[in-house]
Length: 318
Ligand SMILES: [Zn+2]
Image (cartoon, rainbow, N blue to C red; front, side, top):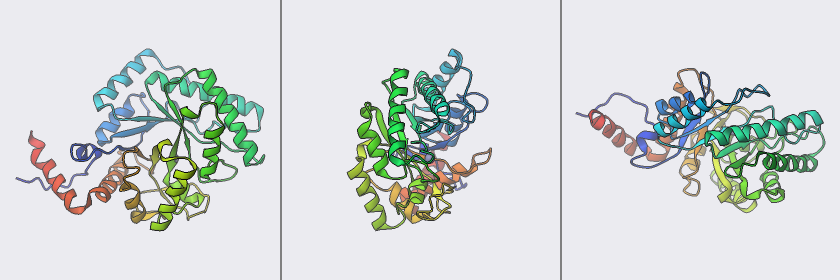
């Protein structure tokens, strides 16, 4: 008999029919390995974490035991991709000498931490120039980034530069900023991009309309190149197009809306790029389940959704 009980449909359920990498940013409280357990419970097929308390500069080193547990849990989950997001305290474009030094030092620690956990992608914001102007800020960012990579001696990972909303003096709200960083770094081959849908919308890239969406990705291709796009932060935006305000909203409830996300999740050029939710959530992660379910519905459509969901019920006894 067909099981008609309402279940949230997860990316893991979809995997046998259509492999997609979709998940969310999850907490690491109670042990870093716990984030992977949560991802598995959610049925996610991608995960993003902070590898340390992101509000503190200094943290105790990872113990051998923590690392082993993390790697074991990762295999257990199915080896889906994991991304590390660095602390928001880090500003690699800061004009303040002490903050800049601390930022570089802390960034090196984050790179090494991620590397010891086996994480291949590290997401960083391009920093804030704090009044010195975009060009000086970008130059300072590239110098600091290169220095940190040099000191870390890690060459088996990629640093993903995240697009920003352009709040205050934040850099990275134009594709040209990221393109300049990649062109001018000594480690271009180690650099990639994380595109945040909420941020680029707030920065003025209209991904809501059909023509706006096409134009945005045409510009991305021309200025950066789609091969550099390694991660998408899939968030709706509470703020208006071009507002420069970074306020994440649940999928479909914000200014980008369901039609905007319909285009994003069905774009074959970026279909295989992992997508991570950074939307508000409570302790039971219900909101993540709903947001993932909505995105899946937008991909497979109502009819296929019902067929697959019924199959899930049919075979649940196996
Ligand atoms: Zn983001």
